[in-house]
Image (tube, rainbow, N blue to C red; front, side, top):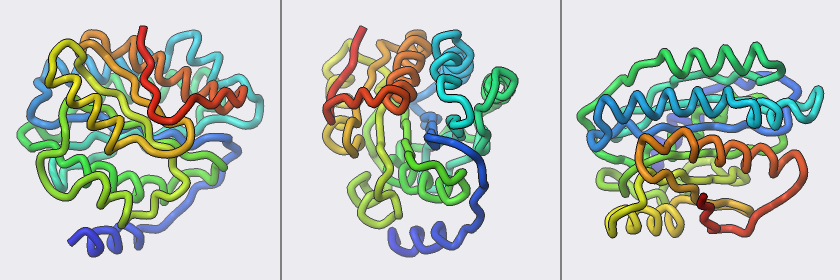
Length: 235
């Protein structure tokens, strides 16, 4: 089943051409554990983080060598939907347009479990249509561990994600269950040199955590400040 799905995704064609240094793919959790208010906080938080002066400055730090961005939402086995297709963030207007599209988007599904392996596998399809950037990062957010379908390990084994750095943003940090989710992302989800897990205390804290995460991901490729793998960031 995993290999068959991987083959179908591999057959989806198309690659855009653009001058870019990093293809950054963001994945938002819309599983049933995320209610409508929390989903809205995710979308507004991402849009506000993307539009913040510090992130805009980092995105535009290298002239003529930009960051390409795409966003999708994920939940069940077959419930992945694009929120924002690939756009090269070449100027403030492009960044503002991407933020507006994210903030005005609405979730496609609400009653499906957390199929994290499928959510990661879907990223391979999205990267097939990405601009030809030398660096690729998947930034996946979530508030729970995989509870449906194949595991992240099987996704990494069967989908063409070699060379993709995978970072995580764990939503929650106050209970033992939240600590379990952090450990799961640290041990099972993130991969690649310099990969890390960021934490948001709750969905109200999502904007701060996302802003910090975006700055870290973008600045890594601006100044070469690679952090140790499996490192958590806080504050």
